[in-house]
Length: 94
Image (cartoon, rainbow, N blue to C red; front, top):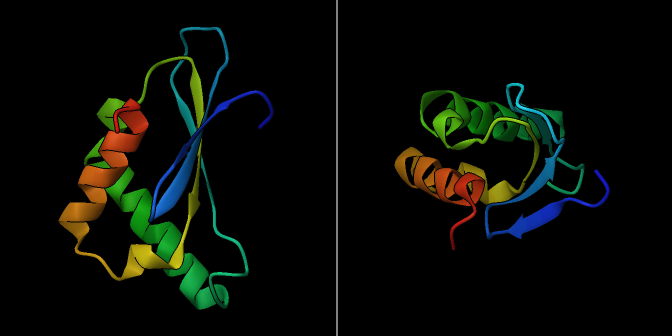
């Protein structure tokens, strides 16, 4: 994703790119091998996906592409905090 905005956080990085249309937002998840083996990476990815599905999907603007780069800390915090932090980053507030 080139030319987009990067929103860094302790738990994950959110990259946002405005496509310039009014279609539904698209989202992608990335977890690098630095985080752990395939089992750990999939757990991080599933936890992020569920947080977006339950809570943060309403915070995404139409016409944007989002890429969430997960970190291992996602597994250590309570799910409620993860949802709140993800929602905050998707909205673009600090």
